[in-house]
Image (cartoon, rainbow, N blue to C red; front, top):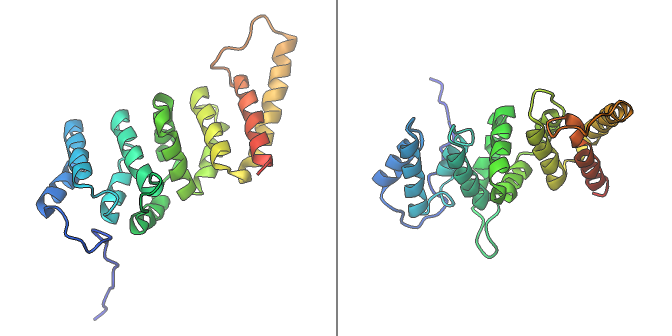
Length: 221
């Protein structure tokens, strides 16, 4: 008979007594609920029990809500996860929870990154937490580079991608940035020769100053 040894997910990274298990499981079920109000209630319970920073499993489950359809709930999840990765000064880091979140990187794709950029659009207070997540998932640099160059993505989200590339310091994206800068500069010069009005905000040539500023930051790293 073949014996399979699957690793067990840790519920808590401490041996201290924990809050009621029934309440915890109920909260996790609510987090997965299709009802938005239920998800909010579940998160409130988890925060009240103070388990996100102590439970690798809870941290992992919360990461699955980074693409939640409710953008405000998404913001709350980002803040919760960000505090696990980069706690306030003097607060201990939950290494097991951080390790499980880092392991989540294999699931993080373009949709997840776009979902977090959308939150940054409406709530600047999450930027430091999003940057912390991106640092934990280095492959997001390539995803951000693809987003910043994508015609089908709004200019505002592409600008957010550029800002995070510079903020996190994804130096491997320099070649893509240089190509984008060259293309935008060429197009901008063409517009100037036949200009009747300044470019609209949705025109991708308005990204050029951000691209150039990001390149300057990355080249100094």
